[in-house]
Image 1 (cartoon, rainbow, N blue to C red):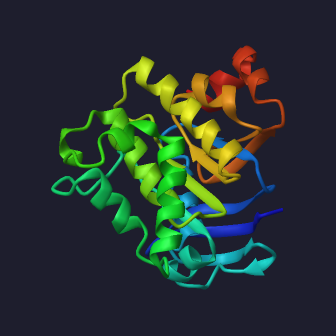
Image 2 (tube, one colour):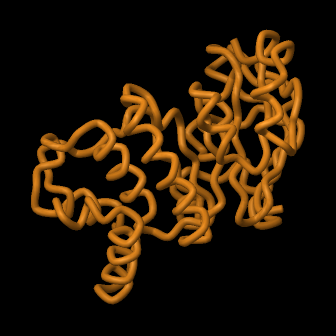
Length: 236
């Protein structure tokens, strides 16, 4: 396992959101977390990345306990989170955004290697490297946000609602790009996604959440698309 959560409890101040959340992801896999609004999906990503404190339980990354470590330390260890909405630095160019994501790289050689890898995954970013990011389409901004996260060649990429606000045809291209990231960059991915139909097509495993708890898991994600009872119970 690359990442393991064991009986994790977390939340916001005194408000507990997660109760006994346990799951893991193997190296090279794509794990999807699905469920209704308010289920605790985004909170799960935030506690993994260190943006929220861990109340109880354990988070193991590469067999090391990281649950009490600062967010920047987790980034150094190889955990990167891309938040909702494809957030980019809009006054900056595409290239400048990617440079912002490379702030921990030690030299130009490492930077060029990471940059070329990102360009190979998202060719449109190289085509538009001198263009202001504010002029990109929604899908292109999401690709840039993911590309920026990949500049440090993370072992684990956390994606929070990458499809938010995207047209269906753009979403399909983005999902193909996410699979490309997993396969070409050898990056493990945990994705939180409301567009269940699309994410179940690309996931290796899916966990369902409701009211801050894991309520099911499935190793054949596409089976859920045909299970109407399960969809109505947990995915509505």
